Image 1 (cartoon, rainbow, N blue to C red):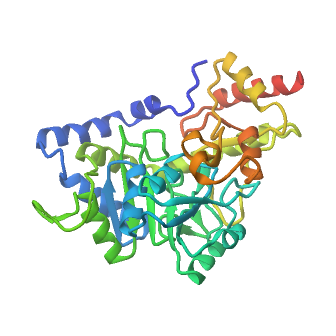
Image 2 (spheres, rainbow, N blue to C red):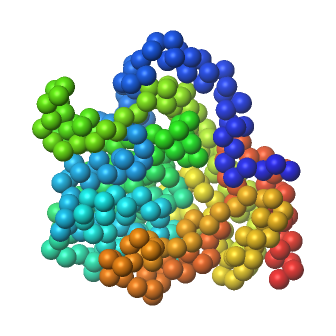
Image 3 (spheres, helix red, strand yellow):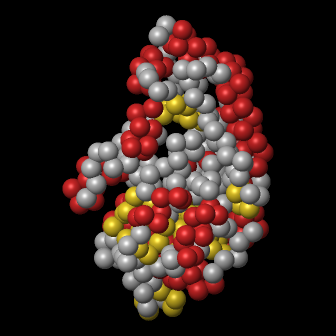
Amino acid sequence: MNIQMVDVKRQYQIYKSEIDRAVLDVMASGQFINGPDVNKFCGEMQDYLGVKHAIPCASGTDALQLALMALDIGPGDEVITTPFTFVATAETIAILGAKPVYVDIDEKTYNLNPGLIEKALTKKTRAVIPVHLYGQTVDMDPLLEVACDHGLAVIEDAAQALGEKYKGKPVCSLGLLSCISFFPSKNLGAFGDAGMVTTNDDKMAEKVRVIANHGSTKRYYHDLLGVNSRLDTIQAAILRVKLKHLDEWNKKRRNNARYYSESLKDRAVITPFIADYADHIFHQYTLRLEKGRDELHRFLNKKNIPNAIYYPIPLHLQEAYKKTSGYKRGDFPVSEKMAQQVLSLPMHPDLTREEQDYVVAAIKEFINHQ
């Protein structure tokens, strides 16, 4: 059985005629940079999220860097975030000369624990970046309360959570700035790298736009230190087609997740927890095994069943950061434990019951032989 972790080919075949038409229209227009589809997509995203501004850029990583640059984050500053996420979150902080400061995660949601933020604050703290990991939002109300009390900017890292809601409010509308990735494997994926920054703040929006355009408001005149970060017109056209289906796809992901969880009721496997404040759009369907995670990983690999460990090494222990971070093993015990226990299964809206049953049967086979 040819199961894919994320089946981008299958999705393309289903929507091939719509996507091909959109791409060919761009090709015929010759407007490959800042073509009409870019502005139209931004407007559609603003409507979808209920935000005033959606600024396109070249990737989710760029979105994080643009947001930090708009806040003038730099040397001597500290930004609080989670050590249990993809490296881009800390990478962009460090590249600008600031220091990533970590707080541990909640054991059930795998997200940053807002109750630990105040202990991590110093006079140098400028911002907090909550990461909505695996498609489930951070508990934002207590986080926003701490940020407000201490004058901190909140940058949502929603790379894995587009379409998720917190108490009925869309992610990307909760912080001062929010960052989206349209990497091909995301719930709304382009056919290459693409990203976006959203905000309801007019001044922040204008500053992000300027920074993303080489710091320029007038051609060959540069008022700010900027970068070159654009969303290609072809990618915007593809994303416009796909955005119309996003809520339907997220609903299918939830249904697939429910089927996995109902099929895997077993003491040896801890299925995903869904917080009462979240919708959970299951960018990843992530199990926990208190024992035997690596053995199951190898067992599934032998059966050609795709699976992945997101993430095997917390950021504070990564080679690129551990020498300068000041952290050591044991500082974030929950993150370190989860790195040894989590395992993600195939998850996408076009996953069939036959494919899920095959995955479930393999996991049960492994458990029964332990």
